[in-house]
Length: 309
Image (cartoon, rainbow, N blue to C red; front, side):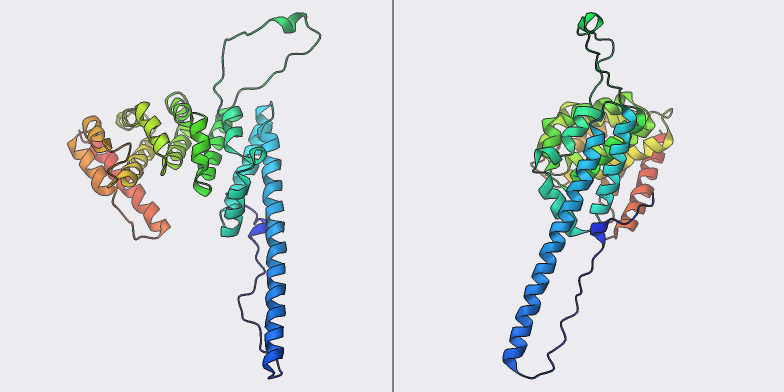
């Protein structure tokens, strides 16, 4: 998806040192250097304020639609938020400012996701019939569509990667049980996005890892990857999930998921579990593109080892 470059990603800073003063007077040069430094600080301060205004405006615009009663409006807001997060990720300064905004309740993204797009619907429940005899119209809220859930999961993933403290907000909204429900009941599109989101919210989050273990998450993923009737791309995504998860918790003695190796061995067999463990150590020195390619290749090998038995 090609996105227009965000305003805050454009830099006009010059890294070249200022040209020396034509006069050789040390006092004049010192005064000129001090003036230049003051100007640069003022320019950076103004630029930082501008970026902050643009980031907050983008969040307010996206969150306004993401809270709407109708799914098509929520989808529009989520797409705008996802586009904004991708632009924010291009600059360290904008990432820092985004992190600052997530300490402001009305600008927090994660709670909105779980209160609207990722909220479980209560089908078939009728709370009251007062609206039938009342003059007040009943408020109708359309349930989240498949596309809406998938985009919301991508936004959740982006928030947790850019702002690690968002994993705590996700935990407060029972993120793991909600996502495990998506994984077991939704379609391929949402399931793939769900696996990526699960990895992002469990990174360095003991609370979410404990919830994942309590929900028998490994068993759910193992069931999907073993089922040859499941879409092959989803099975590959499950393989990538296991590789990333085991690679992340490997060597951490006090990890809440320290027994993950035994669980994978029990569910997938000795050969496949050994392959997953060995492959999870891949490419720590590779660049991101090579690492992603290696991940795809290793996931394919894991799938082939399962299909042989």
